[in-house]
Length: 361
Image (cartoon, rainbow, N blue to C red; front, side):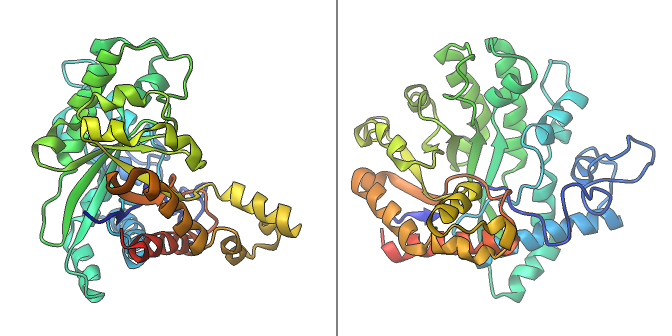
């Protein structure tokens, strides 16, 4: 089994568009619904049609960013995420609850970015580059992080299960099986698990929630992954039905407390973070070496004098020495939304995918 390159999801907006310029891309003018309603959320609410100009603008931004990932030779790119990881899911869950609290109605469990990536327009863009099919990674905020952000630290198993049912509906609706795009990985994003020392939850409730959330993916033979920022609760994750563990920490030494024999015992695999995603740390490293602040000079190409392809490759080799064939995916440690430009983020993805492909694992 060969290691496949991937990415976590978030990506910079195009040059000239800031997150504050919501009137241009990410929000609507005053209308029949609330001011500054995001286009993506408006699409999921079924208040923006596919024929509208706003939908077209949103489509272009998402599709063009996805193309940059594909052209960086990423084997399993994640749909570009420009939105808040909690609000993009919770707002819909809260607005369109079914008879059960925090359980969304099926028809509103929509990730609008996937609508525009499964369209004929995106198929044509792929064909223009001679690309017949891409494998897609979908990341959905996990039930635990949704609960912690909106309810509190003491986790009630029944309410967590309801959040998990909502996540499961997003997962089910995110499974695409078209000739030119196929969902092959579903990841649930749980950065707080293992980091939030105030969280009170039973292992049984956590495992049940995760299993509910990924059920549709498991039934469709799709790899299920959990994105973590700490491996403190990895013993609990190992007992769930999730089959790929990504402990998203930039210091790879922290990963090594996840033992290969545990992965083998539970028949799990891991995703290795081999490229630094925290651009602020990289810029600080550069400043310590050269006494130059790249945020001031804006010569962002020099980032890669520190985060080189060789450095990234060495991290993969080091990880492979420990985990071997239990590494299934490799990519940046986290999302790249904070990177200064799409071009620099694309270059990091290219370096990372090159490292994976040249290593020959």
